[in-house]
Image: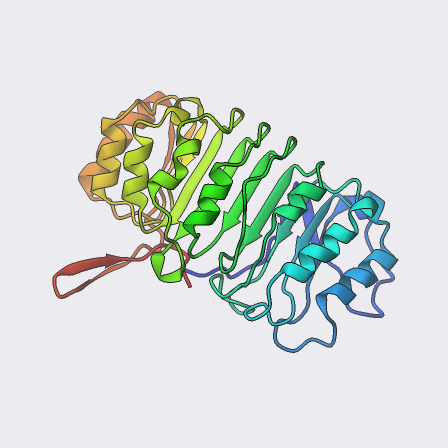
Length: 317
């Protein structure tokens, strides 16, 4: 599976793509939509910064609540550094900004693991009012430890998330964070994190408000499940999401053998590699307690090569 559609909403606001030059006449009220600013990756007459400048001239930035950064020129070769800098430079004109997504590109524009990112933490440091922040693409992504008092949701979508980035997120202080969604990906695309890199999150000491935890799209899904089986953070979660990865009977059995999961509102395991017996055990254990259980196999595929079984995560390249 690849990313094949753009965001259709952000922060509860419908996405609206800022139009091309000369078509800006009929625009929605600034606070009613999530503004998507994008150019053609391969052949654009404008740089992304020029689109942003037109946007700033046509829309009252002081009323903008949500911003979606789509494609920028040559995103598979050129990093997001200039985009980050342009948005940071406009921080005083964007006092109402509450949600920001960086890298809303489909596979036709750039495969997720081709998107060249940069240090994205200046966006958090310069927008203390942000409640929702997301980024797509793990290549060259930098995320040193940061503190943000108001952030409620953090989403990092990658086909391979580097260990240093994972450690930076795990060492960050987000006292208001309720939702954390990390696509850990494959080592073929830079996803070299190990369960130990997540320890500050799993220990429950960094994120006191966390209620939704997604550690998904991972080739080490079994190892993550085993680490979560005894992780203190699980006891206060409403939703645990281990979907999109290579979860097998081994990881699911570890979950069932660990601490109770019957307090969860939902356990999402869709796109998995579980046998019928483990699926039945999960249902018998959790569904009578009212846990919503997603066991959709989706497009999970495996193949055998010289006696070794290989499994796909949902989103890689």
